[in-house]
Length: 417
Image 1 (cartoon, rainbow, N blue to C red):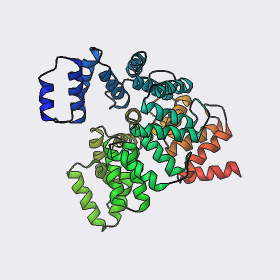
Image 2: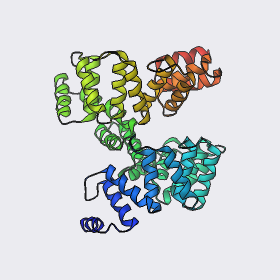
Image 3: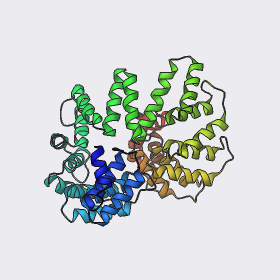
Image 4: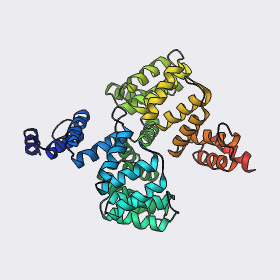
């Protein structure tokens, strides 16, 4: 690989070489990871009409760091490449329509594009078409059809297809429950670096009681920016440390903090706020959150916003809290989205805007944030800023209640009594 890398450095005369060097920089192949340099190389190759580089840019503009996100450009490039009949681009354009990236949310259009990409042989397009049938996106729910499409996508090597097929076997979607088969499929995709399968595999290890393997795979997923894995990693790290003597816990956390382990630092900050095993020290908690927020860690940015909102370790500053919740939300953090919704709902650092609050609660609720699900239910129950809908209120209270939120459980009993 070193010879290839050296050759690429000395042969930057065509778009393919430029694009491949960008790929090496993006993934740290024979060079340290340098995503800024990768972005510049992909952009240079894209200007030379290199289709692969343009597809890489679409992914960066959608899934990259907030500084790199550009939904309008992602849609524009996807649309341009889709017009050339490139299957992967047609699939990406479907993604844009399915969740409203750079364009209006249009599930019928998304379904149509996934179907087209699938017909052209895109394995991810086939998997996404399966998702449409699985969830009723732009078509009627058909679990058996979804299972068949996931199987087809998996057979073609789609990591998304393998993961979704594992989910079918785990939950019994379109087939009989087969936990061992689900485990094997998750492990295949996890070993190939697919963060969602790494998370699902970790969950199965956690259920089995193998916390070491669970932590290992949650960490793998967390390293790729999956925030649910961050939360589970923090939770299991705490559980593991509870087994040790209290002082040993603190020593280990402090040691991890010195080594700049972000998960341990977040845990330690929580412990300082709640006085778990240590004396309450809001000032130290604030300093830890601030240090981690500077590293662009979404959970820390959200927590720092909460400190400013509540005056924990600092003076209350609602405007700063709003800005931080906005930043966390932009990075895909569901807690940040919910807290930003609270800002719009209550006028914290911004003018009250019930509909904006509703949109944010809806987005976070769809990411399984139990607080947002409850907040969304409250809006539907009382018709605050939206049309009153008791059925929707019950639906979202139920979602939140299933995650153990006591208030939602009480409201659900109240409305269904």
